[in-house]
Each structure stands twice: as C-alpha cells, then as structure tokens.
Length: 411
Image (tube, rainbow, N blue to C red; front, side):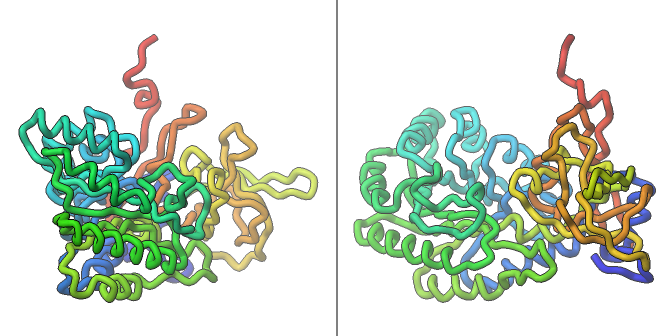
C-alpha cells in the first residue's frame, strides 16, 4: 500500500477506484503480498523437509485459499467448516492439519473421510474418540499430541495459548505418559508432536524455548521406540500494526528453527496465518459525519465493530490513512462506527489526517482476523471483499444484502 501522486494504491490499483465501484465498507487484499509472505517461509526452509500450513482461521476467503493452495501451501484448520472451505478451494486434504480442543465426532468423521494428514489431539479423550472412529472406518489415523510447554508467549492474554492456565494441549510434563497409554489404541499412528504457544509474537525467543522442550520430548519418545516422524511447531509470528514497530524477520525465525532441527530427519510443520495475510489487507470505509461533544471530536464512518472487532475486542491498533492525501492539518479524534455500542470504535484519541464527510479512509493491516470475525450485529450486512492482482481487481465476496440477513430464518 503506497501513495502515488497523493493517491493510495494497492499494488497497481487505486483504492479510491475500488471504493467508488465496490462501495464501502470493503476489505481489499494484495495477492502479491500474500504470496511474498508465504514464499518467505517456504523458501527459507531450503532442503529441510517441511510443510507451511496456512492457518485458515486468519482469513478463510476461498480465493485466498485457492491462491495459497496453488503456491503449495498446506492448511491448518480448527473446524469442519474450515475443512469444507479448503476442499472447496481445491486444497489438498493430505496437507491438512486439524487442531482445536473441541473437535466433534462429526468433524472427526469428515476429516477421516477426507484423508487429512494429521489430527493434533489436545486430550486423552480425544485420542480415544479418534481411535474409535478410525476403527469403525477400518483405517489408521495419524495423530500428534499437542503439548502445552508452559511458556509465556508475551502477547495479549486472549491469544496466548502456551501456559498451563490455558485450555490448549496437554501438560508437556505429562505428555510422555499419555503417549505410553496411547500405545493401546490400535488405530492411531503416533507419529508426531505438536506445540503452539500463541499469536502476534513480536519476539520469537519464547517460541524457541518451546521448541527446545518439544525436541527434548521427541528425544525421549524416540528412545522408547516411538516412530516420531514430524514436529508441528505452530505459528504465531507477529506483524507490525504501528509504523514504528519492527516485524520479526521470517527468514531469521526459520533459520533458527533449521539450526535446532539439523540432523534430526524430522518433517517440520509450521502454521502461520497472520504473518501471511495480515499486512496484505486494508478495510476501506467512508466518512459519514464529523461531530464534537464537549472536548471530544468524532469521525463517524460506515465501518463498525461488526466489520472489524479487533479494536473493541483486543484494544488493537490499526493505522488509518486517507485514500487521498491533503495538505490540511492533522486532527485528534475517535474514529467510530454506526453500531449502537460505546465500544464501537476503530481508533480512540487518534492523531490523524483531516477527514471530512465523503472521504475514504484505509484501515491498515486488516487482512487477518478482520472479515473472519465480522458479524451481522445491528442487522448490518457484512462487507464486500476484493482481491487485487497488479493493475486488476475482482470482488471475491459480494456485499451481503438484506435478504442474506434473513436467509435460513422462518417467521
């Protein structure tokens, strides 16, 4: 996203043109940046056996999934619906990793039928259920136990997953005993170990601490005769939401992983999501009104917390840029939407360029956990999504209509 002649462009396409023709609110994604970020992971591994499994929960649009599948990505899913999306986008089921603490029997059946690569199991009861369902089908299911290494990811509490107080995984100190008991299950292939400590990690040292603990566990399991063939080391690498932030370098992160895995012969899986699509997207919104209440200035726009909930949910920061630059002095204001909640804000007390009714703003770094967390709260149709490919663009999800709001309901 760069300015040319004072107009903001995504690749070689004017964002003002997209806003005028596709309307607002509207999510816009750069295909070039998505591919660049994916290839940064893939190429950094070199000759180390690996699969980069894109975390579908970050952004599950079919066009983006197809784009990544065509580039050779695997997929990390956490629901049957995400598996359906991957298959619909022509993703290879044999590259799918199924994570999550609450897989239902129906979802496990769907994954077995699809022939996914591995279940990352997060409890002993889940191991038992996968075994029973695999037995019923007469197949063997590849599984990895997701271990909780009790490592502080140093991130927002809501997206930290590697401490014992969190719901994810099995205490790593108990994992060896769980593997021993799981040997009784005849329809499980105990071939992997999995770990994921959280999201938006701006320092990957905690990840390396977790990797050390996982590799030590793998060494103990190998010594006991377990045929451990792969290590799933999760995702979570952060991106810069503020201009002054520095982003962890993907190449350096993967380089440290390679050094730790050298000579082990393990196939390594990683599950990046945000760091592939986050910086590749913006949310376009149009200014509706300016309003002052006491000492407070408000810029009221047509996007709201139902479109992008991250600021309200996490207190997240997103840089806001005008689609057309002006020479006017900056203002200090809250950027808020039409939803009937005081918590409906996209920025608070933000110094930003002047924004007048009719102007279009770009809410930056919105490619991850944006549309996927959107809702129809206040009976608001969800936004359109657009994919840019150089100087061309296309709508990859049409804007919802009022009819879409009531589809499936009955009075």
